[in-house]
Figure (cartoon, rainbow, N blue to C red):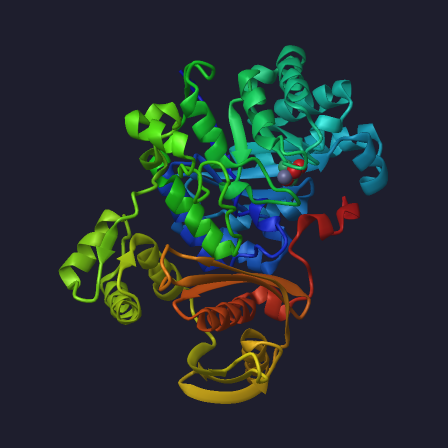
Length: 521
Ligand code: KIV
Ligand code: ZN
């Protein structure tokens, strides 16, 4: 059997997507879920890029067992040392060193010639060998690199000690046949290639990231780098769930390929990443979109009822979609509640369960039927949230067609309640202005969307927002049966995220690698 190494970079390349920033607690929570999902390597961040990212990688390395933990570094000692320190507590640590090799990058970004790039790559790997057993090297923009030069860099870094060589399609420029051919050519032309695993890392600028990754696997790559929900720079990275289900659904094509992924954890992981990054999953997104297994057309429904395989190539339960049933109501007791949480695979401490039960009872007073999705929203929004600086205490809204909307908001901080009133263009605007008055931070709303958590007029509305706070873009979301309350809570969540992130609060430096000074090397 051919084991495919699943390298998840949701916490590094995924988090590089503008507005997707995660704090260290959130990174640890996602990393734990990635272990339950069964990924082999978790790229937890880019330690040198900021104090916050360093701490986040360190926390993941210290807290998460069951996968190799990887840190990114440029081909410079300072970065490699930072990765070493951040990963010190990992049971299995990997360093991922990158340096651009394409003509365009060498000339315009690095202003360096080929021989210097080759030397720097080899020196960096040799230096890392003193600190790490497991070294991965990426010639950035590999797919646009001259082949002969790419082969010589790969040969050099493998000789220096790299165990994995990653071939990034950094700008998502490749086409599947071409990219597969490149992998086959590497296998053919790099003399020491059998001493390393070939990895692929594809971006989705032309919507081909998954197709390119699968083509590479067919041509000899044995590690694939991907993110949950395909999040990442620009149009994102190759999506983990699509690659994994692509392989699993077509054993006739991907013969003998195996991986450790427990596919029934896919949906849960997708929801968690969506919730913590604030990136809503499109309903038609393959594998994890809410419509991915819904059949609307009469002919399709008829076919499904006769035999599911007429229109269904993946069983929803195989990726962890549970049939949405009526679960609980106002009269459900603690026992039924606990059992339902258990069947949803939600592991809570006793204190968290009590808290969740209180929220559930509150919700059941407002809405008759409590579905699985409602429970998940309670757990995600109220119970498993990291520390809160500000909390919504009360909210009164006056709104109508013929009056100017007004909001009166009370927020709690360290036990003290502070109140402010404001008018606005609409109830949400008035409410946000009142919150700005209280917190003293003026946010600029960049994006706002609302989705119902379940069907029904009494459904909870889940508000997802992107807010610019000072010069940072923060995503957040919250749910409630009252959509103005959900809007207020989402905004407060964004402010709390901003205040609790040391990079946001204390430094002006960006955490994104492309904004670091790359000319240092
Ligand atoms: O896309 C890319 O080239 C990267 C490298 C750092 C591997 O993310
Ligand atoms: Zn990338």
